[in-house]
Image 1: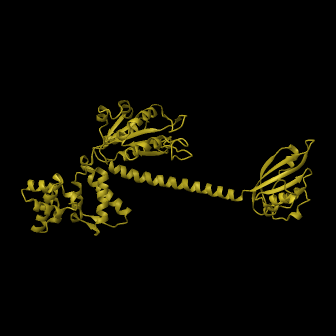
Image 2: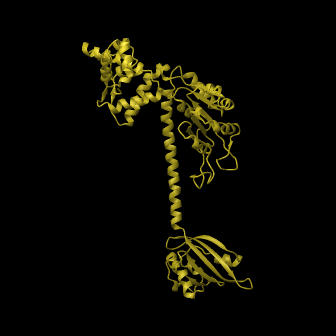
Image 3: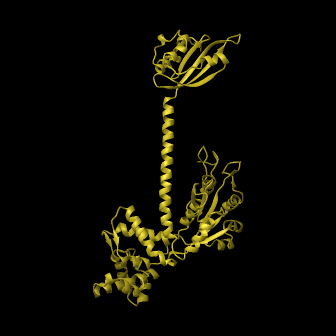
Length: 461
């Protein structure tokens, strides 16, 4: 369809970008409505004038026209106008049959808002960088304080000495120990003591991610690698850990089919994202941890022997909390004060209550200690916490000689002492057998009486 000249005029007038036409003598012969908005001048006042008029009158800072005429080529430059706008101008020459410039078309785009956004983005990046440094500084200070408490004592001293030694190298480390003994804290300690401390510390728990997703989480995937995948692909945790440390918690739960791929990755630090063709190479340090007997899993053919020896270059075993009695009281006080601040509580705890807590075995180790302290602080309605406010669980394995020797706050009369003595017997027996029938048989009482006493002293029966 052929349109008349009015149609094309409407198109040019509708354009958001400025259109300006200059002849071979640098005279402005056409401009659209956007020109007026950019320069703050009416078209009737500029058409027919030399383009230099804009600079001489202060409407613009520069023009590409003379360069186009001199070079006979397209020129782009940035310009500021009297209205405060910033423009990107692209001037393109149109040639006649003799290859001489017939006229020049300027296309001008207002980039004022883009520059403002760019400046704001730069300011935001600076602020984020500043806050990141502040958070990292605060985190490291807090982490150092907590790690010093967790890793304190004569039992931990040789372990920490070895950890400080190996942190100076990139050797692969395997951390062993029961759940909650502080393996992740020790891994972070090694990272922050190493020359990779300014790099990322990426953690992945091999037991909490679906085996079907673990490979793509670790190694990432290419665009369209599988149904439901992000069309742009995804960077895996391995790549995110580049120039830092990759901490693989619960490595014993790594699926068998992934163990082969991971063995290759540890050997040469290369991997191929799911659905991709090209290999990628990263520079990472590997620290892994487990609470299971990996060597036993190797013997049962549930864990690759070659991968086990790749992971087990240097081994550190963390003892359970029950074997760190010398700093248990210190840990209790630390977490009590820490969570009091976190919850904005102004509470205190009696020495007798601390003593009772310290005599508990903590099968869940430090994680269980943290949970118990938080629970005590939240559930107790009084500002001073005594032994009466402690959960029954803490009395389940308490030695009665210690009970009478150390817990003077119970010495309030025969009835109180007998109730607490009865409570301890029932809780100890019930926690051992978890059956009213067996409790009755052990204590040589009727089952109905055993059931009544268990209901009296526990909340889970």
